Amino acid sequence: MFISLRLLSRTSNLTTWKLLVMMMYVLAALIILIVSKNFSKFWPKLDFPISIYHYNASRIPLCPKLSIEQTNIDLKINKIKKQLDQLIPYRPFSHVNTTTSAAHSVVRIIDPKTTYCVTDKLDILLEVRDYLGQRKKYGGDFLRARISSPDLKAGASGKVTDFNNGTYLVSFTLFWEGRISVSLLLIHPSEGVSALWRARNRGYDKVIFIGQFINGTSQVFTECGLVLNTSAELCQYLDHRDQEAFYCVKPPQVSCDALAQLKSKNREVSYLSILEKSLFNRFNTGMEILNSFDSINVSVCNKQTISLKEKCNLGMWSPVPTGYVWNNIWNLVSCNLSHFYTETQMNVCLKGKLIYILGDSTTRQWMEYFTKNIRTLKSVDLHGFGNLRRQLVVDLERKIYIQWQRHGYPLIGSNSYSAKENEYLARVIDRIAGDRNTIIVFSLGQHFRFFPIDIFIRRAINVHNAIERLFQRSPETKVILKGENIRDINNDPERLSDFHGYVHSLVLKDIFQDLDVGIIDAWDMTVAYGTNDVHPPEYVVENQIKMFLNYIC
Image (cartoon, rainbow, N blue to C red; front, top):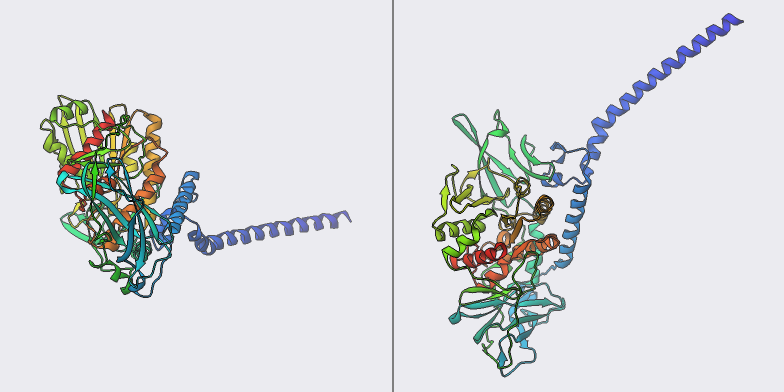
């Protein structure tokens, strides 16, 4: 009996061991199955920011888990996009006749006066109508209001309030004495605004980037971009921390590190329908609503008093209009500008300063101005090429150091530029130590108009976070945000319309309003000057720089 129980026990233990081994094999097989099949199906469903930059998300090496900071960034991006979608609702139409017509819209002055005094308000009620003369029942038209006195070289923007029912309040402050002309342009009807917004966010392929790879003495050119819809092997230039991405089709037997130069051109693609395109011809864009509107005579009245204004400080967000032009000089409404007229005054202000100017060609104009107007500044050859190369000027005696550097991808232009000098602004700011004599000026916008808005929002948030880190290690460092300039009204509206720039200004204000940064509202300034040029004349650039000097001196 005892022997039989031992045998039974041994047999039972052997059976149990075999079952355990079999269960381990089954478990391993299940794990392999999940990894090889189900996991690949599940992974792309996760909302990773880099994956939205590429149609074939499963090809991208992603971190297995997003940081809390990146999750918060994604939430903020989605929140801003949702707010913009609500601000720019879908406005379908079946015929141009039902869209807003400048010629048929009606305006009237609210409480007109026989005599207007300097600092008085001029309020105009606008009732928009379609080409059939029917009053519109919703708003959303993209308008531009301006007063001007060409003989006085004076101008100012107006504030437009949309009541979302087809009526608008257009308010002007009469800043100067003399005869003032009033202009109210219908840049795009609300239906056109809606079409532009949806066309912008439908694709990343309005621009083709061409990458030049150098392999010894041979050169290979391939297509590059923020998104590439291809099954070809890709070179992936990723910033995992900030979830920024750029791609090139990988040349055969050539390293991805061999990417040397880039340039771009517009792709023959449009996300506008034929009917929608009809809203953007020269006869429907930037049309004057106040064709029969008489000019206003403004006088200096006896009882007026001049209120003292504080010095312009960082962190001040001024209401529209932020200022006005008189005698070609920019004057701010909310604070006092000291005017730096001479080379000596600028030298005194800049002495001992380390200045980083970051952005696009509109901030490069600042470098050109400094070099031209401060003769003691000497250029240092950094051995780059093209207009987008890094630039450095110094005055060793006064210890002035001014550097210009372009922002990272995307950069649009038919001329080649170095791919090796690409650096996102957040990374540039992270490597600046900062102190009380360090100043950073940055600008974002023009090159982002070609792409869906999430690219711009993410970049702005990344820069914001880099500035926060900078202020933590160096609270005395000064940072100035330069806004976008307005540009030619009729130049490729789908890609370049100022409506896209206006959206950018809303995004930047939302993101940067909690930081003590200086604001140069180049948008309001260029509207006031009436310069429809992305690269405004030198006298406009000069006034932007004088505003900058007020912030740092």
